[in-house]
Image (cartoon, rainbow, N blue to C red; front, side, top):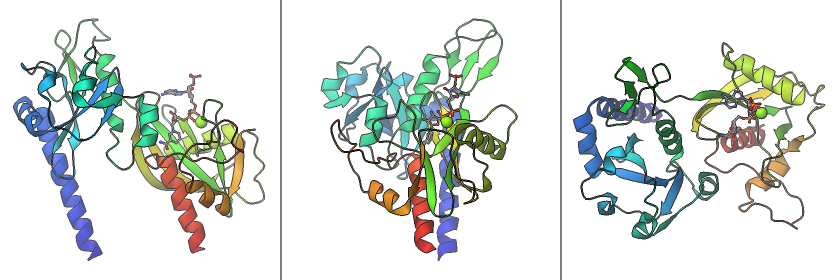
Length: 304
Ligand SMILES: NC(=O)C1=CN([C@@H]2O[C@H](COP(=O)(O)OP(=O)(O)OC[C@H]3O[C@@H](n4cnc5c(N)ncnc54)[C@H](OP(=O)(O)O)[C@@H]3O)[C@@H](O)[C@H]2O)C=CC1
Ligand SMILES: [Mg+2]
């Protein structure tokens, strides 16, 4: 039964990828998909939070604004999904009965796979890739928004992303979380860092953990990955790793070991601590890869 489910899952992924790849390349197919698709609206890169609507008539009767939509993917119901930055047309907020709010704030309100994380990164890429870096000439996008071309040098530009190594370090009984001064009050997360050019994922993890907390990790195991729009466009590769229980002294002032009881309690916390509240641990929200790594670690502790 489980084998059958896996087959079905991979077949579905293959089918969705096929639809998306062909729609990326075919301008007409993409324009047709836009008619029945779902559009995530943004204003200056802030997403519109609203109840579900399909009335896009106020996006311009001539469809000019709609043409600027960028294809993001396909929903599980096989519906094409697009994103669009309405730019100066913020008055649309009223038409759609919702609010444009900062993505970082919206992120803490969203739950589940609908979070249009990749949209902001794609829209930002279009806004900052209007000119060819070799000729200085304007670039033109295809209908899907999956590439931009400089017609004078024939250079094709694709959306860029930086690779980030993310790791939950454990000493067998406790897990290591750190915080940066820019984090909201009480928030601790897994360790992470950008991969340098030429580095393997494993090398990047070892270097980042050594740099940030002065520990030597071993037994790295891959968990899962995620696209991440902050600060620009990143591809996060999430792993678990361990350190010897004999060498757990951390160098970084803002990194701490947490017991499974502390983490289990913090996973129940639904709202961030406010000014004046007693100090308490707050963990990254569910859609973040960090949250998944932390939950996986708790499940492993429960099993042992
Ligand atoms: N989704 C999730 O669950 C998680 C996401 N993250 C994300 O991972 C990212 C990286 O984590 P962080 O600990 O900050 O990384 P680092 O420890 O690598 O520190 C960030 C610094 O790295 C430098 N840097 C090197 N390469 C790049 C690049 N390609 N783009 C931007 N900066 C670069 C910058 O320094 P300088 O400006 O001095 O050059 C930057 O300030 C963050 O955006 C964070 O939000 C982290 C953990 C979990
Ligand atoms: Mg870091």
